[in-house]
Every structure is written in C-alpha cells, then in structure tokens.
Image (cartoon, rainbow, N blue to C red; front, side):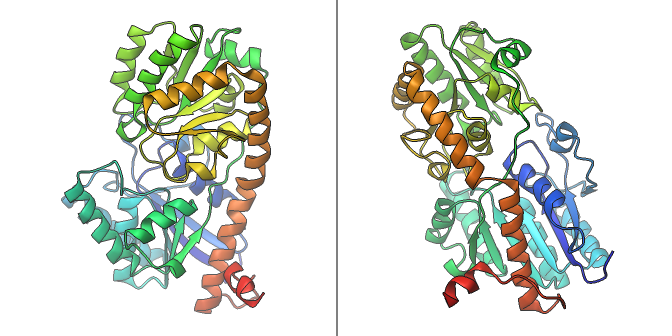
Length: 398
C-alpha cells in the first residue's frame, strides 16, 4: 500500500444496530483504501442490544476497547482512555474521528493527550432534550462546549441538529459541516412473501416501527397510538422490530392487544420488514436523523413521525409522509388518515423513494467525508499529492 495514505482512527462506544453503526461501516467500506488507512475502535454492546457486526456479517476488523461502552463508569472510563492513548501512539493517526457522546469525549481527550493533528466528531443526534434531568443536561452541555473548542470539525447529521448545538453554545458555525446519513437497501421481496416470512396477515393494513425500544423512542406512546388507531381502523396490525430496555412495556401492551400489536425482535433483513409495510411510524421525543425513516423511504414506504430533531429533513411533510406533534391524538389522526387513503399513501411512498435515493445514498456519504478529510489533509500539509478542495472553499470563490 502507498506510504502516504491518511491514517484515520475511528472511535465509537459500541456498534449496536442503529444509524451510527451503519454510517461507520459505510465509511470503512467506502473510502478508498489507496488513500486511507482506517482503524475502528469500539466497545461491546449491552445485553439487550444486537451487535451490528454480527447481524450485517461485515467482516471488517474491530479493535476492541473492553472498558469503552455506553454507561459512564469512572474507573472503566479511565481504563478506556488509557487504552485509547496506547492505541493512538501505536497507530499515529492523522485524524481522530469520534462517533457518539462517550466515545467523543474519551477519543478527543486521547487525541489531545497524544497530539493527534486533526480531530473530528460526528453528532448523530444530541443529548440536549429528553435524556437527562436539567442539572445533568447542563453538565453534558458544558463538557461538549469544552470538547468542541478542541475539535477541528464538528459533523452534524442534519441542519436542525447543528442549529440546536450552536444555540446551546456548542461549537462555532464555522466548525460545523452537515453530512447526512447514507445507506442502501437490498432488493425488496414481494409483499406476499415478506408478510409470510414475518408471520403477518396478507390482507390487513400493517404499520411498522423499527429501532431500539428505549425511553427516548417512547414505546409507551407507540402502544397508546396502536390502541387508539385500532378504534378507527379495526383490522390494523402494528409490527415492532427491535429490542431494548423498555421491551417489557411493549410486551405487556401486546398481551392487551394480541391481534393488533406484534413484536418481531431484531432482524437483519429490514428490507423484508419494509416490503411488508403499508406505513412506518416513529414516536420519539428526540432524534438525530433516523435511519429507520431513511430505510422506509428507500423502500417506498410513507411514514408518520414526530417533528423532532432533523426528522423534517427526512420526511417532507405532506409529500413523503406526515409530521405530527408528540401528542398521541395527533399521531393517531395522521396514522388513521393515511391508512384510510391508500392512493395518497402510495403516492407519498413513491415520492419518499425518489427523495431518499437522491439524498441519502452511501456514495454521497463517502464523497462528503472524503472531501472533509481531504480539506484537513490540505490544511495540515500531510498529503503530498493533489487533493480535492473543500466544498466551502469552492463556494467562497464562487
């Protein structure tokens, strides 16, 4: 391999199924190995989560940092920091690129200790709303402000995520680059085959929800919407695919609604889920740019979603789906209305597919990231051969 490749050390707390893991794997696979030497460092997933490496059969090597996980544990965190410092000194990266809050903190501290030339952090969302009590949120915000001051580029997955962070005093506008997610879906099976594979009825309307079943996703709200929509569309089926620490709530609700609310666990063949769906539903209190809605759009499935985070950058309200408040009644009205109007729902699905194919491809994600890294390489003078110029510079000249 050429000696002048850029070395990129990528750090994430855990590779659980979800948007950040999809983005990390897309970059590991997509960035040109003749230009980049990438290494991924990650902790282990929690007991109720599924490991994206195993589910996707990625075959990509991961350097495991045993103490690096989601939860804050001071002694484990110090061990993880020490391991990251050792790894940096061995690999000597040009760029430290961190993903997720805890990995962002420990990775950037390790980069500061060891003098990594360039530091990049991706906000796949943020922790400013809905996660912690106000006092804890203030501490998180203060920590992120300090870390941002020592970071060369801050990547936000959406414009609203960026704007929320800037409003909270985290980073300067000039530090931010908006790089939306990118992914692909395998070919979809036909509808009848998909429903048979999932054990769903052939002739009833199906609403799907895909993702972690945890507090911020509001499984209680999902169950309440299922109850209310059933009163308006009696033959509806809500199929939920995922697991998490609030799975027990949905299990209890499914026992109350055995013919309406069904739980399917994690599935690696999400294309089968969307092929079986008439509509996708998201009930979260907070989101970055949800991968489940992008996948639904790529499959040609319209969605109803709460208007939070950068969801409005995935769902074009009234064109590719419907955005609602976090109120159960509003979500119920929107869901029932689309279930009762197949022509409108199918037109939205076609528009969603066209929009998501254009906006959220893996090729676009890789190209955006390549330009970001190339700009840092040009600024640092690490890359002797010509590099593409940063889009910001081209725009300034125009």
